[in-house]
Amino acid sequence: MALRKGKPGRIHPVILSGGSGTRLWPLSRALYPKQLLPLLSERSLLQEAALRVADAACFAAPVIVANDEHRFIVAEQLRLAGVRPEAIVLEPVGRNTAPAVCVAALLLLAGDPGALMLVLPSDHAIAGVPAFLAAVDRAAAAARLGRLVTFGIAADRPETGYGYIRRGAPIAGGDGAYEVAAFVEKPDRARAEGYLAAGDFSWNSGIFLFPAAIFLAELERRHKATVAACRQALDKARRDLDFLRLDRDGFAAAESTSVDYGVMEHTDKAAVVPVEMGWSDVGTWDALWQMSRKDAAGNVSQGDVLAEDVRNCYLRAEHGLVAALGVEDLVVVATADAVMVARRDRAQDVKDIVARLDRDGRSESKTHPLVHRPWGSFRAIHSGDRVQVKHIMVKPGAKLSLQMHHHRAEHWVVVHGTAKVVRGNEEIILYEDQSTYIPLGTPHRLENPGKIPLHVIEVQSGSYLGEDDIVRFDDTYGRS
Image (cartoon, rainbow, N blue to C red; front, top):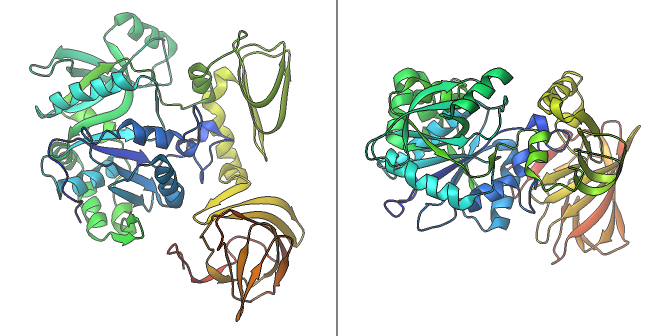
């Protein structure tokens, strides 16, 4: 399977959007992770990443590698940003970055044997875009010499949460690129201070630029079975609407490994381009505090926040009021269904809370009360014994699947807009303040034929109210 042939010489961005961002819980969750959130601007991190490489003179349309569960949200966010991807490749299971990049390389090489690929995580922030683009130019020059280039971030503090790269000798003909002398794991504080003082260490950004063919050859040299598995996953891939679905069995057979471990630390072709570009992996709430604008007391406040005698805190209210008094160096994040409080210096450990929620089988690690669907969204308002109430929003022109439920009946009340309803053999139109009843076991469909969003209150009643009690007969989005 190949992509369309593009203009020669352009760099192919490959944007990886498969992470879950557990350290930014409760805002980031498995089904709506941090790359899909507007954390630093009105746009999501994914949208910012795509727009960063939107210059058609320099870059081809991006290839997005995404988690299957996020596919409709990813596609909609790209559409809203005005970005038309070359492909959205869906991973059926997570296998870290090396297999994801391998699939993208195979895809690009089928259409461009000399493809240069720029690998970008979707969840990073870069404040200095001109500096980033200048570094891409330097990295491309080294890549054309056959180098596998990583971007090293100028370290400005003894950070213990990042890996480091020690640069070696300059590369002849690759202005601004250096040999990689060593990759270093995340250090303790004393070692990090030593690296900062030495002056020849950079943070490892996880951003790469290399010839697709050379990356593939170096990966195959040590992980032949993984490359074979990725080939199988791509050979047996199938088109599904705007997506390319990788074959599950093939991709699952690939070894779960990163680009660093799988290739960069074991090749003699590694190079580093140091750059200062206001970069952050936005990995923790403390990282967000560092990147955000602060008041005179060092506080970052988002949403409805009231702070008295508070210093150096990150306070975020996504729902309701957050009031803080006489505290310092804290992170407080409130959503509709959770409040998280932590010391800023423990921000790395928020992932442990998510792990505990998973062990306890709690839904708060995976979903928000507001759940996005390709047709719109729904928000859980109330859940009780044999009853559940939701607020459903259907986008103009969109419709839910034709479906039925074995264990529940539903009442729908239109509060805004116009609804077209299929109920058994009937088709009816409902306007504001009108309602209908869907008996248990009755095929039904909700559609918005209008030009404004449709808002419906749904009351479910029955012995089982789980989202998996659904039989789809027909679906616009390929889920039946």
